[in-house]
Image 1 (cartoon, rainbow, N blue to C red):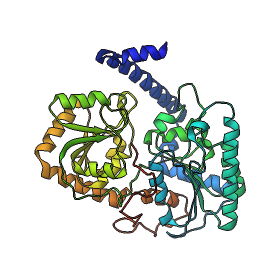
Image 2: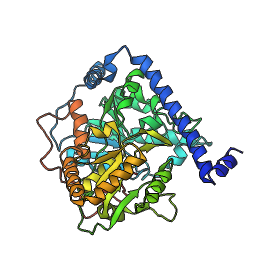
Image 3: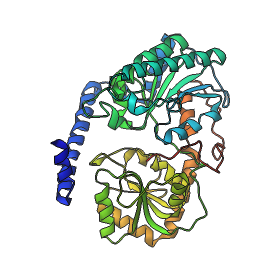
Image 4: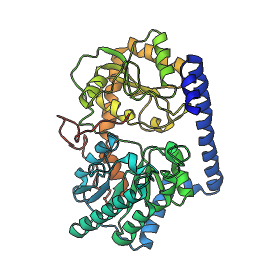
Amino acid sequence: MKQAVKETLLGSRAGRYVYGRAQEAWFEHGYRKRREHYQALVAGDPRAFRLDAAVERVHRKLALRGYTPKLRRRGEVHTFAYVPSNWPHQNQIASALPPLGPCTRFDYAARGYELRLLRSREPGHRELRKRLFDELLGEIRRVHRETPIDWFFSYAVGWDMSADVLHAIRSEIGVPTVNLSLDDKNWWDEIERGDEAGALRHLAPHYDVAWTSARASVPWHWAEGGQGIFLPEGVNVDWFRPLDVPQDVSVGFVGNNFGWRPEIIDALRRAGIDVQVFGPAWPNARRLDDDEMLRFFNRCRINLGLGDMHYSRWLTNLKGRDFEIPATGRGLYLTTYNADLAGCFSIGREIECYRGVDELIDLVRHHLRNPEEASAMAARARQRCIESHQWVHRHETVLRHLRILGDADSPPPGGWKGPSAEGPPSEGWRGSE
């Protein structure tokens, strides 16, 4: 019955609007309820919002279990990376670890474990998870015996990680444990309605460091007994780079079709702006492969960003595109205003942001009329990515907080020399959408 009502609503423009407003209200209500819940818990504790307090608590907890960091130089840090290849951008994140030193990657997807089965509640899913975790711990123990591990780094949620695994790593290996989450605002309480099994909240107190790309979630981690550190996403500037191709596309967008995105694209087209769209679920569109996507970013005079979350027109989240497109240095990146993103780029000088459809239309028309200005902004954005926004920069920051990497070992000028620019970092890689 519920599915039938949904399909009926989505069958007409008016119905889609009604459905969208209902989804928007539901999503925003949940976010605000969560935000105010944690505000009430930590309002009297200013440490919950401070980086230095989180780092101090990390050091205190590590010391209590007898851990003493061993200072390493770049090229000496041994990482155990629990980073599967469920989503394409995970390979980009993992490819930035070897420049720091030896990296042992445990990719359960490559070992035959499917996320759709790990996240299901069908018979046998507990046994599957136990088998995965036993295999993971066995590999960690073996690797650590052969070459001591300096830190455990994961990209995981409740489906593919457990408190028991993290306890075993802490008690047996002792090294710091760090988890990267790029979707705290969406996945904190539940990833799918009615199922809390994958919630990040359950893992928060069991990691030494929670690397989050949502500044707003830092006090949530603190309230749950964890240590959240805000760091934006990064980019591989050797893959996302300028190409010598004609800029024959006025405005382009690459990404999923959901929420209010179709309404925004339609508004641009009604204003007479030619927009080319690629990605899943768009009518008469397809998904671009790695090379096609890179070429398309370079072909666009303006690359459109849609920084929305679900059906909300006001809640935003950092996206992989926020760094991948600027790193190409060709088409101007024009995206939804996001306070976290504003701390990464100079708005109006390196990238451009809008707060509503009318402002978006005005900015598109302005920059199409002033191509030299747009090109200069795009070039400055790439330079910013090279200097400040590579994935290896993010990893180094975490390692400095852990006192594993020394402050004097600063990033090399112009960015690290990563995988060959002839192709993406690893097979099957694609930037995040």
